[in-house]
Image (cartoon, rainbow, N blue to C red):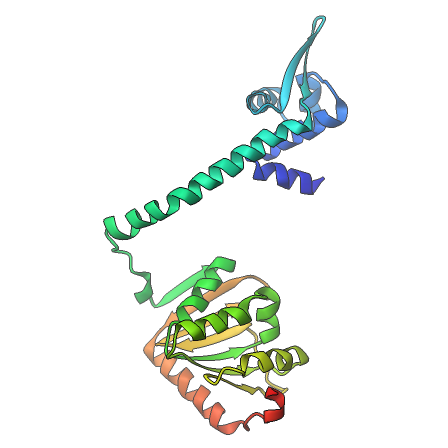
Length: 261
């Protein structure tokens, strides 16, 4: 039932509207008072939402003798809401290039977030923005749990391939948590000569899913407990992080060529 409620919400029904509609489908015609009692809302509130559902074609009002009742319309009537949603989505997509052009060229760009010392991102799209930014640089260093990243972003391997193709100057160096999944994936990634990796010792674990070092930034991405990313833009912090990375890189042994085959 929760899946049905979630779907109805995607058609712009409120939680109460969804409950009213589904209840009437189960009970058949009912008085507003009985319906309000069933889903535990005030009768005045029920009248308001019933009128909304009548306008959407999902509820009809009936009169039987002296009784005024409401009843659910056929579920097939939901199709009109689906078609309206599709039409609106196509219209939004059609108008997006023009709106984007207005926003980027005709309005003043005074809010440059790239210079902020700390930037916080949440959700899949936010984390993707961090990767997109990092992959535009000449040198990218990373401490990564590849299993975490690929489980969350299955397309990430192909995104890196596209980044290498688009950014001819990009060189990527990664310390990777050793695991069967990591060894399988690096065989694909290491086909690119500008991709370099070393496995971390087994006693070193990365608390974050990915830590990226690039152009004065240290980005920390967490995909385990929540989908979040934080970028610290601080020269001193970046410089010491880079030096520690390079020291570890020189210290750890080179990768056996058999692993790359």
